[in-house]
Image (cartoon, rainbow, N blue to C red; front, side, top):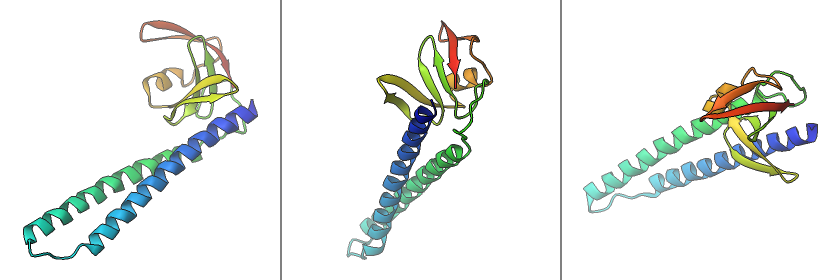
Amino acid sequence: MKNLKEELYNHCKQFVQNRLNRIEDRIANIQDSLTSETKSTAGDKHETGRAMLQLEREKAGAQLSEAQKLQEVLSKIDISTNSEVIRLGSIIETSNANYFLSISVGEITSNKKTYFAIAANTPIGKLLLGKKAGDCFSFHGNQITINRVV
């Protein structure tokens, strides 16, 4: 199970790293565009172009901040220990689906089993936090039993 936790954790780390790389590349491209833009005879058109690039840079900066927050959440996860109580880093097998409580990455397949990497602040994540194997909860009208927590 430790290898599975490591695999799921590494998948999440790679997801965030890829996102960071894409955003940083975009910021660099926007910066290049801003510095290489020259004043043309159509002054208003030039200023509009620069303003649009500035907005794009601000938007990319916000995305970078969000990705860094995800990286911070991952840094707080300790996959080396198991807990009976669901917490960040837990693998949860339920009667409905399997989850890895970390960050929202979506579906991850390992050894022909599907796990959903979810954040603690998602609706299902909030319901799972603090529960143990054998506990039941209701989600979207379905009664779900927690079969195993690792």
